[in-house]
Image (cartoon, rainbow, N blue to C red; front, side, top):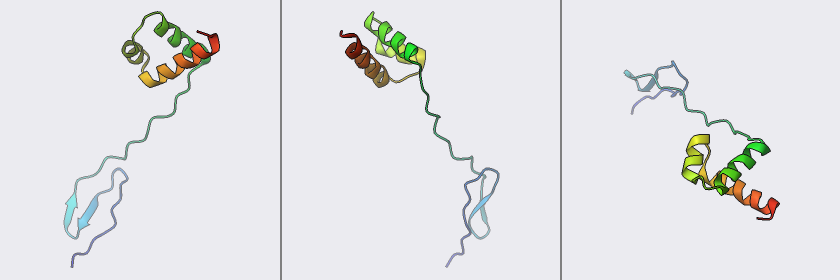
Amino acid sequence: MRSTRAISRSAGVRRTSAVGTEEPEQQPIEVMARHRSHSTAFKRHVAEEFLTGETLHGLSQRHDISRQLIRIWVGNYEARNGL
């Protein structure tokens, strides 16, 4: 039976899977991006750009936001402004 040691995921620590066999150091686990919040004025501006003919793809790339988020903002904009 093989003897194993605890495996650590922190950066700079070597991990050992079995006695005598070392594996290379692991990079730290990636952290999720922080939740971004956007101002009401920015949301309105993006919704208006879409309604004047800008594409979802173009807007999402330019402002680095998802197309679904733009759809939500446009729906809210239309509901509030009676469009």
